[in-house]
Image (tube, rainbow, N blue to C red; front, top):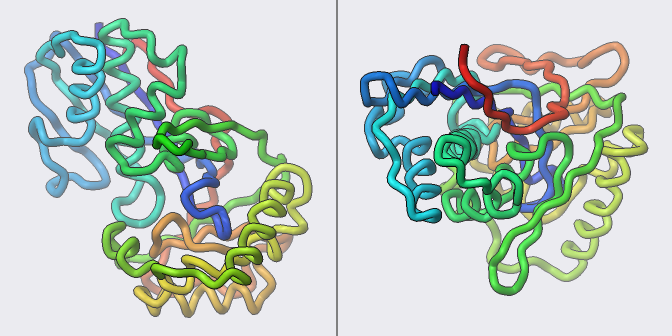
Length: 292
């Protein structure tokens, strides 16, 4: 039976919510797995001609991980990826690929892991190194991902306020996640950590109950400065939006920005070399259905 998975884009590291808070957005990748088709991988849309079209593709890697976990053999498959999430822009493209492979293999092999969402989350974290994007990709809405002392991940989903108006500003330039991680400070002053923890708590309230507090709640003193320094064009747009009173944060590891559009829209457009994607919050995460 041919299966189709749809997975939303996600923005993690929301302001002070570094490696914890994420938001799912209604821009979706579709991945089809067909046991009766000619084996192979095809990538269409974002990443076509760039992402691998063999067994090293992240979708296939994730599918093999599920098969290994449940001790089953993965049958030969025709895998077709129709990607709408831009690569290396901070919108969770790799998490979407990993989650698509996990949910497809879970359904195809009858593993039953989706009924125990933390199992899929743990596998996604194993592939990604952390679980913030994957949590939102699996659950939709606003998610908070945490790990215990043994490294096991779990997540909770919150309903976002219906008044949120996300707009993602996507530049032509890219920033690699690895480079963004290397730029992070190794030590953080106590006062900065306390400031950021307070803003993170406020951000949960702002995203779910009080969007009028987003401007203050998105402030932080740990990671955004280092990441903005890697992309001067992004820094310029970020500062312009802040001066206009627009709530904004770095999307993931950048270089995109996530803003929350006020009444009347953005006073200052980002300019040449940028796209503005006005996206609703995805209320549902990854899903798998028979592909008719």
